[in-house]
Image 1 (cartoon, rainbow, N blue to C red):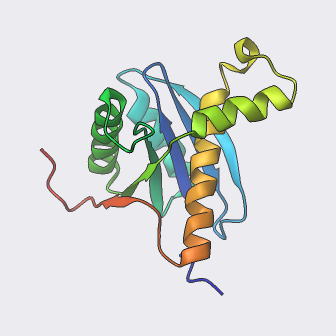
Image 2 (cartoon, one colour):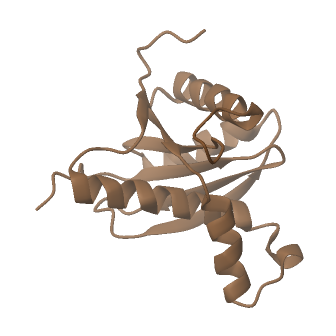
Image 3 (cartoon, rainbow, N blue to C red):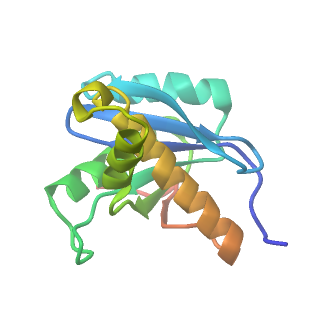
Length: 157
């Protein structure tokens, strides 16, 4: 049996226009979509409202690195978003490599018969589900949480 830490987690897929939010049950059996939040000055406030409904153990934020594992402009944006989410929520945030999560989400939606245009409003939620489920599966299989932690008590520049 693994040493999976019991508790709800919220998966966050940070994009320039939208932020996908997903959640899992306390036992990490299944990640499910929650909401697509418009990316604006109220994004974090809305995510905090969602978090108040679920009382998460942590946030799992996708870190969009390139295929070689190097940072991009989107990586910097996601790190800044995660740091602000951690600071404002007081809840730990895990940054998890999300390579191919959006590609996987688009493929899943296409295979279910949805066009890319019809999927625009939910693809971010599905990407959040994919990255959260991958993080849960990794922790269950290895006994170690996925990604790098940002703690509320750390100082951020």
